[in-house]
View 1: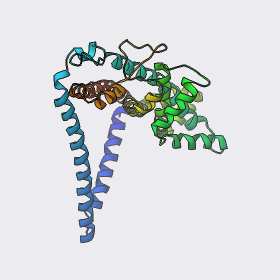
View 2: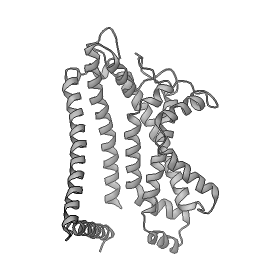
View 3: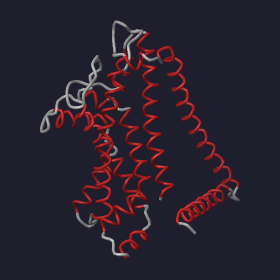
View 4: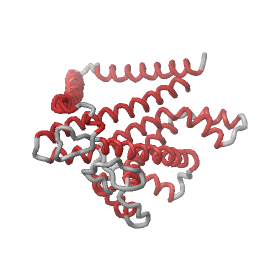
Length: 312
């Protein structure tokens, strides 16, 4: 049987077994157990319904309210307090693209390299390796504003002194989401069967050849899942960017290493605080644009993940 069909059959059997266990637990013979199971199922379905309804409601609200401004001016024009009917998001869209591109360029190699070291090379008995693992797990739960303060103290000023540029924002956001990428990449690498490693080493391959040619290609779908989650969080963050120089009103196209910059979440936050109704409509249209950019990036990442799932 080909390897792909074998993996598919193995996944199907595992899914069927898990389903059978859940169904058997839900079909308890005890009357109290049946009521408890049904109540638990009802609560889960209610929670899902509330979450989906709230999400769909917010998207529909933004779409209906921002529909009059979903035109070409939204993408080609700069922000304006005078011509509110033609103001746009061009600098913010470019700034967001620069920020996310920089984040991806940082978190993928650093996150994957860290995960490979911790899973394949690190000696778990050494105190410093345990210290690194503990800090990675703790950093995943640190509020984003703390990373903004860290970025302002050490990246914008301090040792790096990069100033208020998009590169500083990218590094700050990368620090924010890097623990998520490391944790998910470690889980993906850990999920690769040890038999693959043993077979590769048994055929004379070195440890690095085994990792680069066998382990990482199989773990790519899981790693890309972590990258998708990280990008989705980074693209919507406004608090840390406010501390590292994402100004709310610029009319020129930003640069990655020079001059000021802004981003979609920051400009939307600025627009929604203004009293004029035109800015509220513009903010709603900006929400739809930001969701579209996020959907496009995630769609490409999901396509890439599915491509590697079929390949390996």
